[in-house]
Length: 210
Image 1: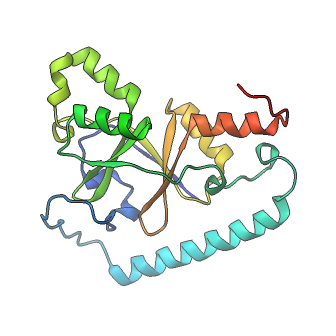
Image 2: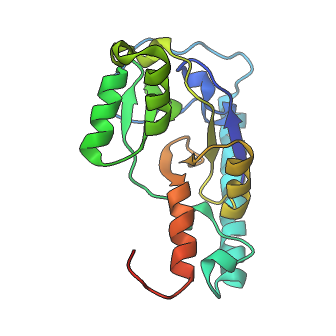
């Protein structure tokens, strides 16, 4: 149930944790350039390792769910990220511009976008970070492509990660979101500070409208 922190950097597939780097995201139009071969990578060994990790995580998830599935979720000792995350994700290729990102966020009513490089997750950007970039570099920077920009640090976690532990990492790194990635290397959701606020608001049980 790991949590990974990717430091700021250019939008490249290598920004994703090494265990996930060999997996592509899906039918996203992008560069057809082949990936560099990693001589240390062993397909059979790594596949077996991932399968073992997945089986272990699944067993742990089932065992914890049986023993901890009582009382408000916010008060449980173990709360898997899968219970909290939002599955809806929106992506843009690294060749897109800041203006493209703002338009995409506005169109879908979201504040976070996954940036892809060669169909691989290369970063996670939010509306606030884009506004700060434009404030520093001027309105003309709307036409800047993500390819030439150092993307912010981002967190990745697995669906079985403890949401309480992830919250501590988000606070420690001053990040308001984390990307959830399954053991096949595919993005499966996003956890934001709003999800945590909603969790604890629901836990009050008062049901007032805000």
